[in-house]
Length: 84
Image (cartoon, rainbow, N blue to C red; front, side, top):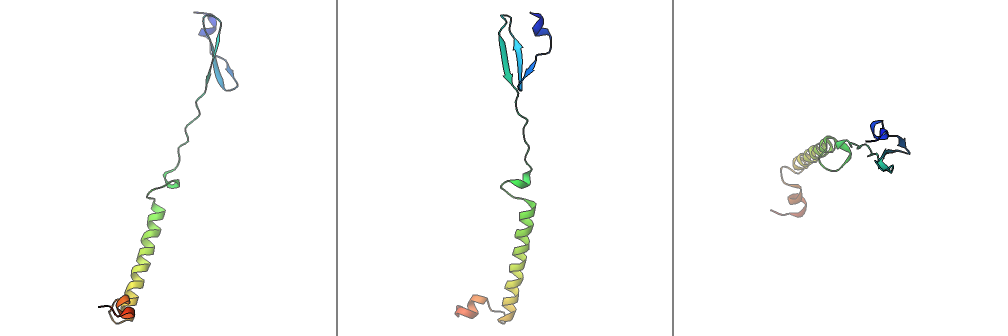
């Protein structure tokens, strides 16, 4: 083993360079660090979206109850279209 292999390999332009027994240089690129993305930035179920969906559902349910009371307990479609 040569003396060059026992020392710390030099770093040239972002690559680690090693020397083989024959004097040839090998350059190994550094792997980039992984970027961990917060779960709230992608697709799927998220707390903010689920809260908004629940709140809008509650508003719709209250609107349905108000409509039922306004038409004397009959469904909105029954009162307007005469169905039922």
